[in-house]
Every structure is written in structure tokens, then in C-alpha cells.
Image (cartoon, rainbow, N blue to C red; front, side, top):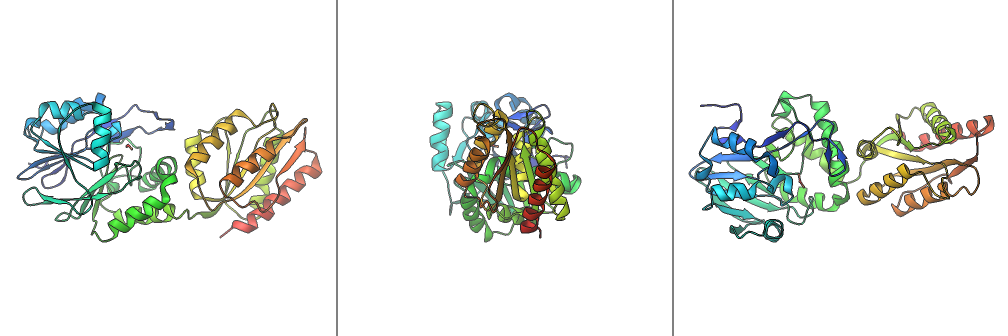
Length: 393
Ligand code: FEO
């Protein structure tokens, strides 16, 4: 019987859709998410990854439509983080005979998380096991995005279970990229990379090299839709993002107290438009940092603005810089600006943050006392245009 969850004959998507999640450890997930798990019915019955603990009923319901969960022979844990391992205790209680295959760091992490001794078997790059007509091959992908991370490949199917890599936080009725709005899926994949994978570009490059020798027709990530039409496309995107490649676009990120910094942001925007550079302007009082990061991923020029508040910067900008500093986007051009009444420390702090990220700042930061006048506004427009000419494609 072919059921809707069948990806290939005998391979099923059995994970859980989380329609309601809106905050994923600080990442705003407006479209919800999925915790994908996969069941392979061969001579051995294999479950690849599980789901969040509170979604285990959905996982069991999906498995039970295909086989009795007690019959699971092998559980593969590609990643310890609890959106994929949370339901392991329940699964291993139902199928205590199952072998739990995971990386060396995976065993360490699972023991720390669950204080359980299951039938662990360490697997990693170069290891493969036959499950009947098919083979499972394992590739360690450390720091993509945890030390334990690995992926599982079935050569007979040219199919990769990639865990977090190539994922998107999207809950939707469709299971595959070719059944979805591909533009939206790529936007969510970019947001996911920007907020979760961005600091690990070097490790992504290593992982992509390890995967380069595999023929991959289908990528089953642990979040979002399955890439069966455009697997090559998302791999190419990961290569670009891992290399910190950007587009000739500008991003203005700012907050404002009495609209002076907002006026400066607008003049910079006008100048960038004069230079024919696509520009996005994000006021941090109304935009979430995780959405702003998606713009950071693709923008070559980033202009940061804050008025001086208590000899420092606005708290929204402080939070954004902390987040940005952890995610470490490279190879950007930056510019700092802001208004002040006295003191005027904000621009220096913004410049220091960008220097810390290794960003070049072709123009010295600029601050305006109290309220910008016409010459100030013209000057900011000119700066916007000059900066725009440096980055346009
Ligand atoms: Fe989707 Fe790193 O967990």
C-alpha cells in the first residue's frame, strides 16, 4: 500500500509537525516547524532520528500506521539536540532490543542528556551496515552544528538523511520541495542557515567536501520539506553561504529614540537607492533579530545605527550585536551612524563591534547632534550613495 508518508518504496516520513512553535531557542519561527524522523522497512526496520519529547504521540501514530514500533531493530541518532532525541527514551522503552547507532560524541551527549544505557553502537565516517536490500553509510559532520552531528546515506537510493543541514523551520501540508512554494522554502532555508549554521562555515565546507563524492538525488532534512527536486540547488546555496558569499545589496539596521537616527537611516536609504543598490531597512523596535539575520546573510553592506543612550547604544541594538557577534558573518562592509545629545558614544561602539567581526569600514562612522538639519541630511544621502557604489554588482 502506498501511503502519503512514503518517500520511496519502503521509506517513510514519520516525524511530527509542530504547528504552534513560534520561538525556537530565540529564533522566531512564524511558520512553525517539523521534527522529521524517517522509517525504513527492509529486512531490518530502522528509525532515523526521533522528535521532541512532547510530540512522541505523533511519531508513534505515524510509525504504527506502517509497522508495530516494537519491531524497530535499529534507531539512528544523527544528532543529540532534543528536538531530535527527545522521544528516544519512549522509543527505546517500546523497542528495548533496538541497537542505537550514533557517533562517538553522540553517545557521550545522549548519556549526559538521558542518563540511560541503551544498546549503543558507535558509527562514523567510513562505516556502513547492510539492512537488507539497502545499506546505511555514515558521515560525521562535526559542528554542523554540534560536535555529535552526523548524516546517514543510503547509496542504493541516493538519499541522504541530513539532520539539521539543509533544514527549514516550516510547518506545512506538503512534504516535498516540488509540492511547495520554492521561493518561500529557500527563504526559510536561508533564515535557518543564518541563525543556526552561520558560525560554522569552515565545518560546512569540510562536510560538503565529505559529501561531494556521494550521488545525492534526495535530501531528507530534520526540519521542513524534503529536497527531491532541487537537492543540487540547496547544496550549492550552502557552498555559497559557507564561503560568506553575499550579493550587491545593502542592509540598514537601526533603532531610534526621537526619530533623529531614523531620519539618518532614511537618508542613507535614499542614497543607496540613488546608487541603484537594493536596500532593506530594519528598525529593531519592530523587527526580530532572527529575521534581520536572514537579511545579513545576503547583504554585502551593513549600516548600523543607534542613538546614544546612557553613554551606550539602544538595548535592542545591544541585543542584536550580541547575537551578530555569536553568528560571526564575515566579508562585509560596514558603516556606523547615530544621533546624540551629549557624550555621543554610540557610533564608536558600533564601529568597535564591526571591527571585532573583521568588517572593513570604508567611511568613518558619523554622528549628528540632537536633530539632523538639511546639510546633515544631504551629507547622509551622499554617504549612502558613495557606499552603495562600492557594493553594487
Ligand atoms: Fe534541529 Fe540541532 O537540532
